[in-house]
Length: 160
Length: 249
Image 1 (spheres, one colour):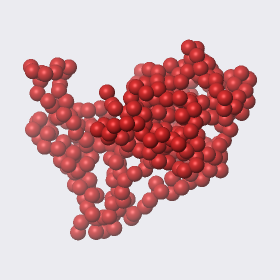
Image 2 (cartoon, helix red, strand yellow):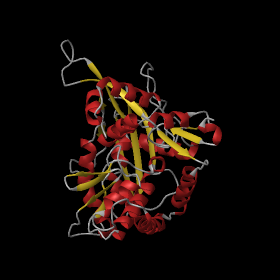
Image 3 (tube, helix red, strand yellow):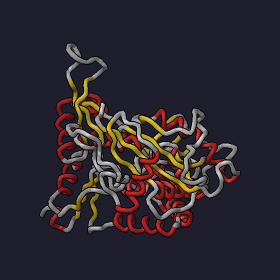
Image 4 (cartoon, chains in turn green, orange):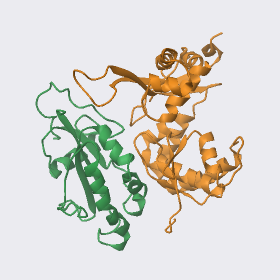
C-alpha cells in the first residue's frame, strides 16, 4: 500500500448541452470508458454523478463544464488509462465535442492514501496551476512531481 | 579509430513516460558499445529473439531458440544488458514462493532506453517536438492528419520490401520495414513498436492521431480492405489493423 495517491482533475468545455445530439457519440462512450477506468490497474476512486455510469458529475461551475475527477495509485497507472486504452480514441475526437482552451485543463497532485478529496479542492488546484504554473501542489503529466517520501508526515501543502 | 571520433552522435534516452527527459551523448563511446554488442551473430540472434517475444525471456529459452548452449547464451545476454540494449530482472520460475520455491532466474527484455545512432549527426526528434507543439498551438490537428495520410500513401509506394509485392499481403511487410514490428493476434495485426515513441510520450493525442492517419494512408495505398483503428495498449503502438466492419468509416 503506497502512502500517497495521485488525484487528477480534468475539465472540458462542452460545445453544446450534454443531452444534445451533438454530444450523443460522446455520451455513448461514458459507460464503457467509466467502466474501463474502474477496471484499470491502479484505479482508486472517481467522483460520480450517480450510480448510473452514464451520468456526468453535477456541480456549480457552469452547465457546459464537464469535470472528471479521479484518484490513482501512480502517475503511470493514470497515464496508461488516459493514453494507452480506448480512452485515447475519445481524446482523439475531443474537438468534435469540446472547446479548445489555451489554459491547462488537467491538474494532478498527491494526496494521502485513503483521503477523499472534494471537487472544490480540485478546482482550487486547477486555478493554482493556471496562476502559478506547475509545482508539487499542482502539476501535469509533462511537468510531474514524485510523491512525497513515505517517511514524510502530513499532507501535501494545501492549494491556498 | 573509435566510431565516436568519426563524428557519431549516439543518443540514449530512458524510456520514461511523459516528457522527454534524457541526455544527448557527447560522442563518448556509447555508440561503440551498441555496435560491438550487436556485431556478433549469436548475440544479434539472441537480441532479435528477445525483442520479438515482447516479454521477459529466460536464459534457457533464449539458448534453445537460437540453438546455442545455455552458458554461452547467458554470456551474450549479459553483454547485451551491459551495453544497455536489454533490461534484466530476477524472477522465480513458477508461482511458488518462500521455502521450497525454485531458484530465482534471470530474465531479459528489450531495454526501455532508446538508442539512436546517426551518421552524420541528425536530430529529427527535436524538430518533431517543435512542429508538434505548433500544430497543437494553432489547432491544426486535422491538417496534420491529412498530411499524414498522404505521407502514409507515399511510404507504401516507396518503402522497399524485399521479396514482397504491394497488395493485400503488403501491409505487414511495409509496417515491418518501417519498424512497427507487426504480429498477428487472433486475426488482428498488432504493432509491438511505436516508431514515434518520444514524440508520442510528449504529445500522445496528437502523435497517436497522426500515426493512425499515416497507417490509414499505408493501408489504403496497399489496396487492403482492412482498417487501422486506435486500440492502444501499454508498451505498444496505439494502432491495430483489423477486418473491415459494416460501419467502416
